[in-house]
Image (cartoon, rainbow, N blue to C red; front, side, top):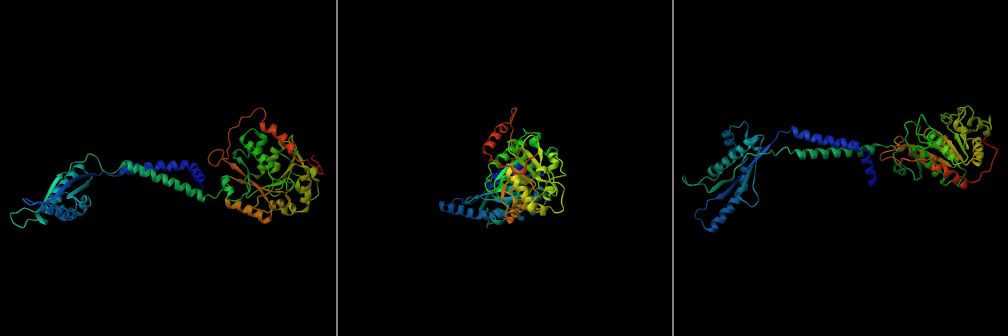
Length: 480
């Protein structure tokens, strides 16, 4: 993944990441509040060798001897020989091993100093134990470990307390700030990890980048999500100034610039699965094309679950199936819609053999005149992965425009649809992404528009279309 992909993932999941970050901070603070405070008291001892009246060389030897012995003395601090007298003196309710876990001793490198630290839940008791350990340690070393050879002589080793322990004023643990920061970092890491995992496990189409990983065919446009799409499917007609209507006009422009020199301007609009918006896309695109003054035919090629007649508010009892079986002439079956040159050929009655009808020579004879008379012919076909109808129609037309729904169509489904077209030898002209969110990282750049009495694109587009449109020869398929 590229950097923009990581940014999109973080942007898309920022609420969840923020929640886990806050929970981590709260968790760290709560954990710190549950911890009992610990206080550390320290004392320092100086180890020396008696050298009364000794020469300089003897002093050096004594210091060297003390440095060598200090490393051994450090290990003596936590022994029962030192700690048992402390327990008895202070009347502590503990054992030697338990007390040893709270007492630590160390010596700085190349020194004759011993640092003794005691950790306890009571600040005063920590200082008392540290001083008692220092006294007991001195007694053990001078009276037992390094006891004098003569009865009235002094020990050759002297233990001097250079810094007695004092009652600590602040607890050494818990470190509330550190625990809160650590909790926040853990929450942040968990949030980012969950966001990445969700992205990896999410196999749905979301952005144009997802389409680029599946096919190299151009993305012709993105259609914004409209929660009221079921109530007003013909948004270009009902609300021509909405951003969603503008997205269909953008799609119209991209379709006009599409290279269609290889055949008649007959396009199949299909999708990988049901419910991805192919029928509403075909209908709105047909209306947007007709706004430019072009002659447009919208054919309902979905002979299994037709929708065009319901969306366009037309009578669907007579339509494509009647034309294919020779009951009605195509010119009589076409129904004019609106004030522009838009004609609709509904599906007619649902036949028992849709694939055979769509693949018949009769269908070829119907598409021929339509392609010659109309500037654009759009055929709404069934989903590719369910039936072969769209692939059959694609062989008789210029190619297929594939519709995919953002957040619904799975990548493997779209890949299967592309593979189906390639296997059938049908050209994939481009893709359209529907149900795109209007906000967030997966949006397709929708914004606010200011319209006058008439949309600027509606004023300029007819002139461009008429200037560039290829003259069509009228055939027997006369509209109306």
